[in-house]
Every structure is written in C-alpha cells, then in structure tokens.
Amino acid sequence: MEESASYNPREVAVQQLVDAASRIDVSDSIVEKLKHPKRILQVSIPTRMDDDSFQVFTGYRVQHNTERGPAKGGIRYHPQVTMDEVVALAMWMTWKCAVVNIPYGGAKGGVICNPKEMSLSELERMTRRLTSELIGFIGPDIDIPAPDVYTNPQVMAWIVDTYSMNKGYLIPAVVTGKPVEIGGSLGRNEATGRGCAFVSREALKTQGMDINGATVAVQGFGNAGSVAAKVLEEMGAKIIAVSDSRGGIYCEAGLDVGAAIEHKADTGAVSGLEGCDEITNEELLALECDVLVPAALENAITADNADAVNAKIVAEAANGPTTPEAQAILDDKGVFVVPDILANAGGVTVSYFEWVQGSQMFFWTEDEVNSRLETIMVNSYYGVRAEAQRGNWNMRDAAFNVAVGRVAKAVELRGIYP
Ligand code: NAD
Image 1: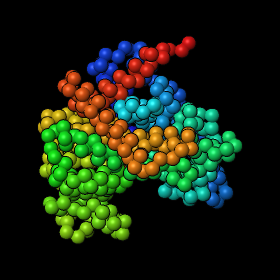
Image 2: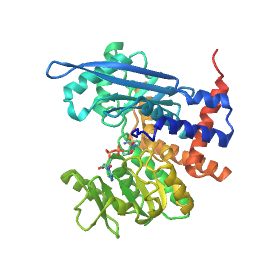
Image 3: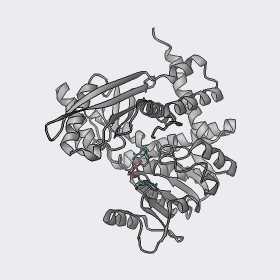
Image 4: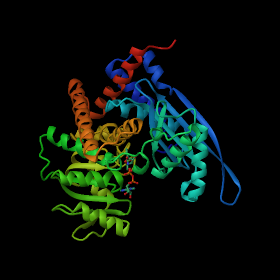
C-alpha cells in the first residue's frame, strides 16, 4: 500500500487494532503494547554499482510482534517504501498468522530502491549487504523473511547463501519462498490462490450455493488470481471473466482457465483469448456472479464502484482490495466479504510448512502440502465464521477479533518481562 498525505497505513493499522480490541474487550495496556512494534531496524546498504560507483540504499526491517512465535513477513524492494508502511504491513502479518493460527508473529521489510533500474548483479550485491546488516536480527528462530513486491525466489536464494556463509553451514529455514532446489516447498507458488479457492468453496457452501456451476470473476490474473481461477475451475465452478492490467475477457458459458494462462504466457495479456468478449476492469467488477476474486492491487473496490458490485461473495486474494467505505457499502448490499487476512493466508501458511520442512530437513510431497493447507484454511474459515455469528459482525471484523484475541491472550499469559 502506498502512503499519501491523507492516508497513513500505520494509522489505519493502529485504528483497526483499537476497533477490534473494543469489540472483544482487550485491556488498554495490552492494546498499548500491540500498537508498538517490538523492534524496528533501519540499515544503510552501501552497494557497488556496475559502473564502480557506490549508492547507499536505506532498508527497514520491522518486527511487530513475537509473542506466538518468530516474526514472519516479506521484504519488498520499491522506490516508495516508507517506515510507516513497513510498520503497518508488519502488524497485518501478525494478524494474518494469528487468524490461521500458525506459530508466528508479524514482520516486514523494505528497501527504498528501484529494482527495475538495477542490474541482476547490483541487486545481488545489495541483497547480500542487506543480509549481512540483518544477520543478528533475522534467523529461523527470530525472524524469517520471504518475497514481497519485486523480490522473488532468487533474492531469497542470495539471502540463504549469505546467511549460511556467515554461519558456516546451510540454513534454509532463514527465509521462505526460496527455490525448491535449495529447500523451498512444493506447492508454495500456488498456495495463495489455492488457499483462496478453499475459502471461496466454503463460503459458497455456507451461503447456500453449490460450487458446481457457481460463476466466478477474477480481477488480476497473476500468481494469486490465475491459480485461484484454475483451482476453482477444477472444483466445478465456471470462470466467467478474468482480467489483468491490460483489460479483461468475459465468456458467459465459462472460459478455459488453462487456455487463458497459456494465452497470457504467449502474448503477455489475457485479452484476445478466442471465444471471449473484451471487457474493462470496471465492467468485470460489476458483473453478476457468485464469487468475485479481487487479486490485483489494493483499493480496487472503493466508495465509487462498490455499489456496482453484483457478486454474492467477494474473496480477497489481494491485500487491501476493499476500502473501509466500500466494505460498508458491500455490507449494506448483503455482499459476503471474505477478508484478505483470511482469504490470502494460504501463502504464509505454506511458508510455515516450508520453514518446518527446512528446519527438519524432511520434505513433504505436494499432496501432503495441499491437504495440510486445506485443513488449515477450512478450519480458519469456520473459526472466523463462528466469531462473525457470535456477535453479528462481518467476516472482516470477525477475522480481526479472532486474530487480535489470540495475540492478546498470548501477551496476557506470558506477562510483561521482567
Ligand atoms: P502478480 O504480479 O503475479 O499479479 C498481479 C496481477 O494483477 C497481474 O496479472 C497484473 O496484470 C494484474 N493487475 C495489475 N493492475 C491491475 C488492474 N488495475 N486491473 C486488473 N488487473 C491488474 O501478483 P500476485 O503475487 O498474484 O499478487 C496479487 C495480490 O495478491 C497482491 O495484492 C498481493 O499482495 C496479494 N498476495 C499475494 C500473495 C502471493 O503469495 N503471491 C500472498 C498474499 C497476498
């Protein structure tokens, strides 16, 4: 999420905590503790560029909370990274891990840089220097980074190598989202979309609809969106529309997701797939359908277009796709929203599996990964739904209640040291 003068993500995150705490009656002192990140590290990263000059990049690593386990969260490389943004993202990771009840706290990292203007070797040198600056701060028992915006498995591989060279032996569990060849997990790439498909299936069930023939529209046909579409199609749903940044396609009878993936791989866009009509992203969001999956960027559904949404269920594969004003409009319209911290938690869940496998050097089959993911996503969905029914809250408020409640209980049980 990007910061603007009128919108500070850290303030939004703190307000969400305060609101959840008031719904579930958490003491003021625990709220005060959770408002503050446990640790913030700012580092300077001098990096030799290809022309032999140096540039000094600034990086942050924020550990919001470690009451329930080591801190967990991605590292992003982006020119607009700010410390407040990283703090907010770390706090959201705390809630995401708590809502699916995996034994992690929340963290996030960011480096202010423009990776699109850097060569691979410049990125490698910057990543390795960043890793050495973070050496005492990260680790399998302390804080485990992962990919985020403009970082990828290769960046994770450089972190593994730098960390391991400093310790003297291979430590794959220092990061997740690394290549399978050096200890990554099978199923990690598909985990977010697959997890979103599992909760969409359960949402259809509890809202009294059949997945067979259920109509689905997916905004954003990247990693999360294309896998969610593929898995929902395998489950029997009919994918009537998908889109990417260049526009969307619609097919009333249901499109072939595999063909759309191939077409996008060949041409760079979903647009132009045979047998489909071209539509805009705004038209996609307004389609009459059973499930709408926003899987592109934040703030896709806003006060301006929420009223046009014609879906019965919105399953948020993206982070922050629905603004608070839009959520209120969707609530009034009776749209059932499965919030991001639940609907896209499949990614961090399989990251947890990757860390478990790397810590034990004992690797699972893809079926084992997927079936354990299913158990966690389904249990989490029904846990949040029970909380929603308990107080007549929407699913987003209920998810925050569950998450904040779990973390607050851990703080209460452990007490304040000394
Ligand atoms: P990605 O880059 O693979 O895919 C994003 C897709 O969105 C691309 O196809 C892009 O063309 C499309 N897009 C961009 N702007 C658009 C627009 N205005 N309208 C329609 N489509 C547009 O990214 P991803 O990894 O799939 O992530 C998507 C979202 O899911 C992000 O919000 C991300 O934070 C969230 N998420 C991803 C993961 C994961 O494991 N990949 C985990 C948790 C959350």
